[in-house]
Length: 118
Ligand code: FES
Image (cartoon, rainbow, N blue to C red):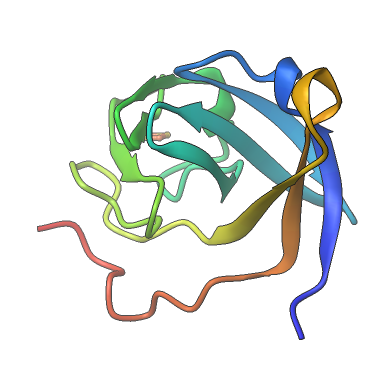
């Protein structure tokens, strides 16, 4: 059974933005988009850079350093120079209104079939 931990309040993540959190020692970017809330390991696969400091565009997050975009749903690298996927995590929301919190799974989603940029 998947375990979840509380990452942050939903109100702490602005729409089309992302925040950095540490969950059990793992850096996670929690991104809030019009299509939902997503969690992705907060390290670009091209270099040791926080993805949470980049821009959220639709269901993608863009690394601020060299511009690679990663699909928030699968973690796959959509544009070069990054080619490797970044782990993504299941997210669930609990609570209501201003008390809504974002919970993130403690283990990543298995997306081994989507690890390379096209
Ligand atoms: S460090 Fe992210 S694309 Fe280069």
